[in-house]
Amino acid sequence: MSRPQLFHPHERIPREGYWIHLMRREQLDQVLDLEARAFEHPWSPELVARELEQDHSMILVISSEDRVAGFVIAWLVVDELHILNVAVDPSLRRRGLARLLLGELLDRAQRCGMSLATLEVRVSNEAAIRLYEGLGFRTIGLRRRYYADGEDALVMQRTF
Ligand SMILES: CC(C)(COP(=O)(O)OP(=O)(O)OC[C@H]1O[C@@H](n2cnc3c(N)ncnc32)[C@H](O)[C@@H]1OP(=O)(O)O)[C@@H](O)C(=O)NCCC(=O)NCCS
Image 1 (cartoon, rainbow, N blue to C red):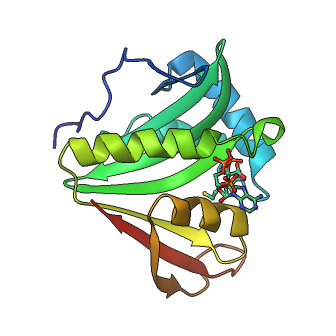
Image 2: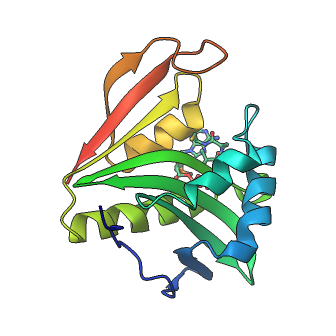
C-alpha cells in the first residue's frame, strides 16, 4: 500500500510561535529523549525508530527553534487514523501544545477524507483523557489488561 500523505515532507505549519511538521531524522534523538522523560513505561528507541520505516506510520512534531516540544505518533490505515503515542515536554505542559498538535493532525485527517480517529489510553491518565475529550473523542470501550503492567485501557474514538 502506498504511504498516505497527510503532510508534505517539507511542510512546516506555523502555529502560535511554534512549527508543526513531520519529524526530521536528525530530531529522532530529541523525540527519544522526550519519550523517556514523559512516560513511566517509555517505548524503546528501537520501537520508535521502527515506526520511521513503516509506510503507514508518521511522527508529527511541534517545535520551536529546532527544539522538539512535543510529538505524536500515528498510523494511517485506509480511512482510519490511529493515535499511538503523544507527549509534550514536561516543562512546556498546560500551554495548549498537545491540543495544537493533535488539532492540526485531526483537521488534516478530516480534510484528507479520513472517517475515524481511534486511540487507547490508560484509565489512570486523566490529563490525556481530558485532552482527547476536548478534541471530540468519546469512550467506546475498555480493553482489560491492555498494558504490559496490567492496567486497563479506554478505547476512544472520534468520527469526522
Ligand atoms: C497528556 C499530555 C500530552 C498533554 O499535553 P499538554 O500540552 O500539557 O496539553 P494541553 O496544554 O494541550 O492541554 C489541553 C487540555 O487537556 C487537558 N489537560 C492537559 N493536561 C491536564 C492535566 N494535567 N490535568 C487535567 N487536564 C489536563 C485539559 O482539558 C487541557 O485544556 P485546558 O488547559 O484548557 O484545561 C502531557 O501531559 C504529556 O505529555 N503527558 C505524558 C505522556 C502521556 O501521558 N501521553 C498521553 C498518552 S499516549
